[in-house]
Image (cartoon, rainbow, N blue to C red):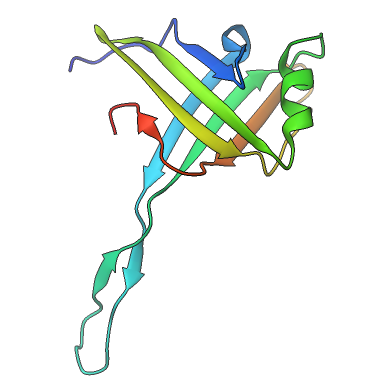
Length: 132
């Protein structure tokens, strides 16, 4: 696949399209190692652990109805379905992740900066597609 510039992506949280407020979006998938070393080996050995993921989104904060604050803040302590899609480098891709909303940051920024809400949520269950 050729190098590409990320643009014109769609990001929804529980069915609410917040794309026009998203400054940055990323999905990380990991499969941590589990130490399986035993006495007498002299070297550590590992086996594959359980897969896990994180969805990170940086929103331009907005307190209007049906926008960032009123969509995200009530989700604290529950689950949210995050769907993102777009055409990148000529290939169309999309993905879905159910995330546990374990934290929200209703406001952030510095003097003179655009107000933001940044979230980083662990996935719960299988992350579908995004070319994983």
